Length: 333
Length: 256
Image 1 (cartoon, each protein chain N blue to C red):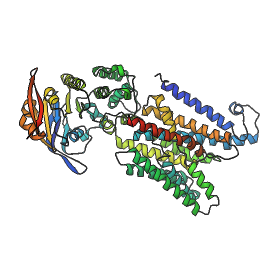
Image 2: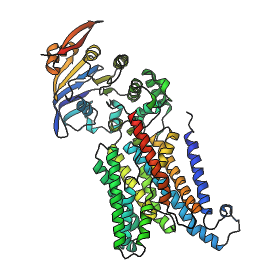
Image 3: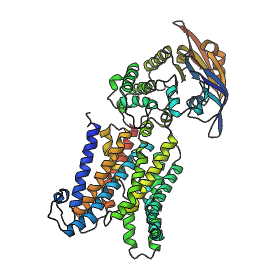
Image 4: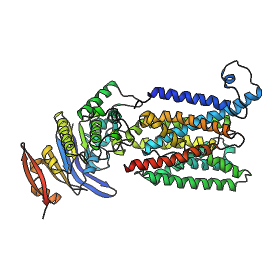
């Protein structure tokens, strides 16, 4: 089979992200011509357009890009680490636990005192989830145990999130519950970008550092270690990287599921199944996927404020079932 | 290269699996590690490869194994686990290239030299034609050869292989033992665990017998693999067959 050369694949995906980014800032309740945005000195859009663009559309698109990249990358790393295509921060309960952390920070009043309390608390939620998963699954890392633990964690974190919101004197509790469990990028601003960006970048850096170890891990624990890979270090990098980046992403968008599952799986054949090469393409692919999902909710049901997580779950859940089925079938061969 | 084991003890999940093992490997030879199931063969090989915690001492060229940086150790000792899975459908060339990891750092890409070594390793194992084929599509015997090529690409002084002939047909078993002999002729030490007494007796220079975590015997084939010894350890009667100047030990029946 002829594969696209890696640099071309990377540039192609980067181009796709750029195009979707431009479309994302052009589309909405009013259409703003991308050309008038991109070309310097071009006129034809007024003060209102400028405000919509810079205060609403651009931060939203930037967040879609960053969060999509985070979810795609962390999915690829978790799959490489656990050597299983079914791993993903959403399914494993990491996103839901981060949501819980964020909600606790907001409704305990912590965020009023200290703005970064929001991402840090979400990060702590994510970290607890990853550590719990590792503890529960142990060294053997049987994927069924991990996924069932993820299911339990997701339910528990969801229930606690609802409880926290119901207990608070918040008249919009019902709406907020939906936001934290399904995720959305509506009405996000530069403040959110500023809050998430440093953590997302730091987390992604840690995740990228696992690349070579993930390649070696495809031969199994013992072989990887005998090739000089420090598994302890790899585990720590993956755990901290996932917690920091997914925690920060969830703090501003709520829990968005399935991106980390779908994107690496679709792109894996394009890089010859090599875990290290999957990382950068999954980050770009995740960014493209989330930008596209966010565009589609504005195009399909512009009046209804459809949640982003609804779209990713609508695509992702059937995909997960199909993947589960095909993995099982392959194991039987 | 000189690997010295003295007074080695090891535990697995709280149970003592190796007791007071002392051994030394210091010249190119093919060593067969035999013993019944649960004798501690895998644990010993994992300890020698730096994968298993132990008490006592294992020294490589006079330095404690634990003192070695993992990569430096990997340039001298290669371990071939019994598990023959590659978790993602990598191309065979990529699988073998993993053997070059101990020589690369950070985000290094494979050098021309790395590619040459990988090609030679694949040639040695007769799997060069599978370079661009997915590991998944190969037969069990072909997969085993690709994984051994990975170990060769590591260019170690010593290869430690955990039951490498398991699940191979007789032709592939013999061809693997022949490859091991060639590696020894090229100056490497090969330690392999085996269940097949005939292959062990026919191809190995030296036999180490473990039983219930104790070292029972260590020496040349004809000194160690005596009918009495095999009967005691395995509970089977054996027959010795002479062929092309070597002795072949063949199990015949359960001992009385």
